Amino acid sequence: MFKGSMVALVTPFSGGKLDERKLRELVDWHVKEGTSAVVPVGTTGESATLDHQEHERVIAVVVEQVAKRIQVLAGTGSNSTDEAIRLTRAARAIGADGGLVITPYYNRPTQEGLVRHYEAIAKSVAFPMVIYNVPARTGVNILPETIERLAGIESFVGVKEASGSMSQIIELIDRVGDRMDVISGDDLLTHPIMAVGGKGVISVSANIVPRLMAEMVDFNLVGEWDRGYEVHRKLVPLLRALSLETNPIPIKTAMGIAGMIDPEMRLPLVPMSPNYGNILEGVMKSMGLVGKGFA
Image (cartoon, rainbow, N blue to C red; front, side, top):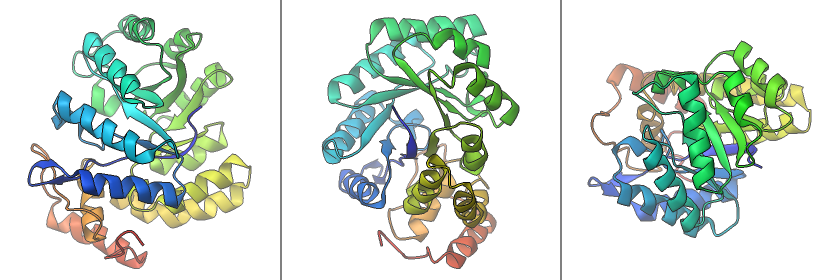
């Protein structure tokens, strides 16, 4: 249901508040550039520092501006099951096409706890959902056999995999690939993940190079692996530079260098260190991205 190149959309701020005008510009640009779906209020969208009213407002602005032209997969996860249910219900009511539901963070549930968490959400909300596994952020890894236990639930249509383990991803696709779409959550691993059966990416770098990411993914989806790999190789220097500091610091910095948004973030995130910023700007200059705006 959710496949292709999907952007983990940043949340633009101005003076500490949501910049709705810029958010609408970003949405329109992604529609034009070939992005398959926008994914607001995820990690890249700084959901951790948005209050609930802001969280729902971002989803509402994105849904309204998309106007059914592409899909909206809204971040609705939490480390509280009740809160995840509430956010998922809100996204459905607003008109999103699905929810991206991260594994509970900080409290580090067992595998049985993860199953019960997701079962409770599915029982409470009839809504397409993508399970999001990112152990580096949450402190817990949802195992392939655990996802297999959830694969029979109709609401769970996909898994965003950001474990970084190709062995785990291959096992996951073997176990559930015929029932759930496996989506890369790591831009640098998107080409190899798709080579073993993945259906696309929820991408950070697509915030600044959406057409290139869409081209790579689209080539892969039709089996043109050599052409997909050519695009992958072009992207590698940028993907590495965007990993120099904690996401979304580098991507917001990059978008500022490109003249797309004000690279404002909320504490505890701070501006990129000068040394890493210079490396990022150098890579962007070599790719013709400095000052490019929405061109």
